Image (cartoon, rainbow, N blue to C red; front, side, top):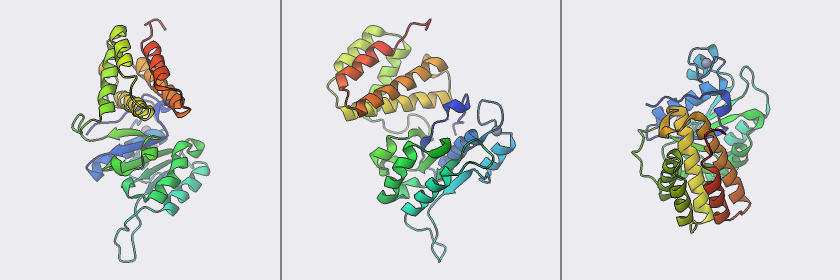
Amino acid sequence: MQTIRFADAGQIRHAYIVSSPSQEEGFQVALRIAQAAVCQGAPPLPCGRCNACRKAGDGKHPDVSIIERLTNDAGKKKREIVVDQVREAAADAVVLPNEASRKVYLFKEAEWMNPEAQNAALKFLEEPPNGAVIVLCVSNPGRLLPTVRSRCVEFNSSAEGETEKSTMAVLGEEYLKKVAERDRLSLWLFCEENTGISIQELTEFCLSVEQRVTEALCFRADAMGMDKRQLNRIIELMEKCIEYLKVNVNVKQVFGLLETSSIVSKKQ
Ligand SMILES: [Zn+2]
């Protein structure tokens, strides 16, 4: 299993999807994110040794809540995670943490959130109070609403490259390669060639690049031949593009930004 590590607390985002065919493996990755969020040791996070890491790892940290399907009177798991469970978590997040600097909410089998629960989760995911971190564990992210997915950074905890990539994810890889090689001409051609895609597709492209880079930062910092600073710059750039696309800045203009801002001179 891959080991998640964050270079510092600033790299921990507020909403994650951990996707894994194995429930247990996915949950272990989610616990690592929780540990990193509450860790009191020295970076990289989680340190794995401090008291907070130990408690979070055992699922016993007071600021780490685990939300899963409730059981019925016969002790059988209910079919869905219901809206009240999401509302309860959101209400709890308003209360300041007990020990850590933030609270964490781990949703087990999050694909069992019914549509009402997922809709309730939307605002929570967008602006979790007090810097809370939300992690949705799923075996099939396709069962989450696209609006939910678009608010989260996705981790695929199964071995890399095994899952079939979407067209936009493939384009994303191509883009990153050109950026890593600092090949301005080929990047320019790439941008010109793809101006025909839709706003939605370009958003998906930016999200997949952001996700890929986030994974690289957490799992293997030297990936793709770029250093941490370059990778962080790309994340910022992708977020800017996604914001622009939300307010209907057109595809051509966003590609223009990618053309000019993806590769900066080494001195900057
Ligand atoms: Zn720690």
